[in-house]
Image 1 (cartoon, helix red, strand yellow):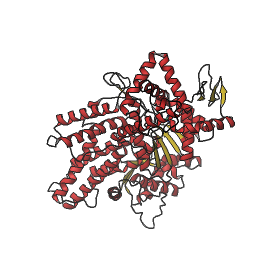
Image 2 (cartoon, helix red, strand yellow; image 1 turned 90 degrees about the vertical axis):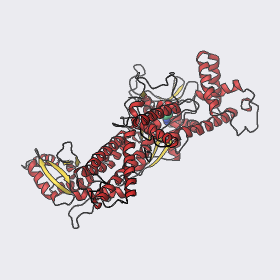
Image 3 (tube, helix red, strand yellow; image 1 turned 30 degrees about the vertical axis):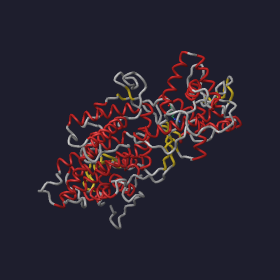
Image 4 (cartoon, helix red, strand yellow; image 1 turned 60 degrees about the vertical axis):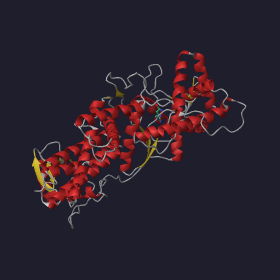
Amino acid sequence: MQMASGSAFQLDSVNPMPSILSELDAVARAVFEALGYPANIAAVRESDRGDAPYQCNGAMAAAGIAKKRGEKVNPREIAAQAVEKMQAHPAMGQLEIAGPGFINITPASALLTDRANELLSNPASGLAVDTPQTIVIDYGGANVAKPMHVGHLRSAVLGEAIKRILRAQGHNVIGDVHMGDWGLQMGHLISELAEEQPTLSYFDEDYQGDYPSESPVTMEDLARLYPAASNKAKSDTDRMEASRIATAQLQSGRRGYRALLDHFINVSVAALKVGYGNLGVEFDLWKGEACVDPLIPDMIAELKAAGVSEEDEGALIINVDDNWDPKTRKGTPPVMLLARTGAVLYHTTDLATLVDRKAEIDPDKIVYVVDQRQALHFEQVFRGAAKAGWYERDQLFHAGFGTMNGKDGKPFKTREGGVLRLEDLMEIMQDAARERLKTSGIGADFDVEERTEIARKIGLAALKFADLQNQRMTNYIFDPERFTAFEGKTGPYLLYAVVRIKSILRKAAAMGVDTGEITVEADTEKQLVLSLDAYGRAIELAADKYVPHVLCEHIYRVAQSFSRFYADCPILADDVAPVVQSSRLALAKATLLQLEHGLDLLAIEAPDRM
Ligand code: ARG
């Protein structure tokens, strides 16, 4: 929207028109400033009462300020002065003073119309931040050879959404899977393979030649070797010792074991790429704990030399809390850099990863999307990194999350009680989706292939939306039936909204009706545009606190506003005038564009029809 020429209003926004709310907000601020009050007291916000969509409460604060200055004015008077000036601005529609001096604001229809047309031409309008940052998202976190569990699923789904949301704001975001590939599980794999195939060159300490480039194991082998070893080690201390020794030798650089590790990692990465890919999750970096191990000796030397670390009963630690009391265990316990045995620990690899990221990327921020149960670990690591002077404490953020539980309230497991495999989970969801399609008669006339693809998309959307719509810290219960329902706040409901608009657009095309300029008239149209306008704010909030549920809530509201609009404003009926048809069709399309844009940020894909 263009400001009236010669207007006395100075707007400080850089975007041509970030949102209706920001436009109104800028006007209110300029007016309060012109009246001699600080601009910030005039902030316009969404109204919590039904009288008008927005409100400005600046008059009350202004009256307080006036009183301190010794003037005697009541807030209603100030509101009346402000309204008089605001009214002169073309962005303002209906203004009214309520109660002690609240200003209720209804924007001008022209403003709604302009905004709607802008969103039609660019659904990402108003999302960009002024100063983009470089941000690393550490998520996924699968462990090599160990099966993925629901924590890894949540990390992948939440992390992917957070990454995409930040990217939509224009940040340079780098997703790193940070695989767990440096612990005892590697020793288990090596020692178990040594039992199975002792003649492999990797186990011959005198072997000097090159090792084969072909892996001696497949993913299936790894999936078999790890549980075999870890089960034996539970009851057999000698077997456990063999795994420990293999781990220690690997970590101290034994050539054959290093070569095996590379094979294990390559085989796992290939499998993980498929698994994450099926989930719509993509990483920019496939780094892990093992790849930062070479940085550890120098890092430790630096920490020692700087006096950041200290010896403690044979271990090397960093004290990160002056009030830490080992007796009562109150406060934040120290970082463990080296165990008494000299072994490196989870703290150590995470600190080395911070060193690596500083050197390679130098990010403004790093966000760890990891189970809330690791909160203390990250607090310790972050404090350690700040004490070392590598990062400011507030550059590092742990975006923790709760668990997905079974009906028993415990972290979800398979029916057999074993750890869950991602493939199994997706299959459960797809079965539930297929069942839904059958009972609701959707897609009955489509061929098998298309129906399978639809069920896949519904299953995924159901699972992801169910996960993302919760405030991330809360635990929730895995309930495939509820997740796949077409009614209520579910993924399938949103897919249905998308598909419905797509089908309206197809039908319009077949009838020769095209989209045109949007002119916002009916109340339900206004409501829809106001809903669409809140997109940027939802993204901002979701990005600032790393809470995708805010975006979920927004998308759901838009879908509901669309339903009300469509019920009230038929588009293709013959008694609707052609310009009105084109306008309504265009508004439907603007809605579709935003729904698709938003769902894409959640990594949710909709079918073309269903
Ligand atoms: N592999 C770890 C686990 O399974 C998660 C890794 C999280 N990221 C990190 N930088 N520590 O618990």
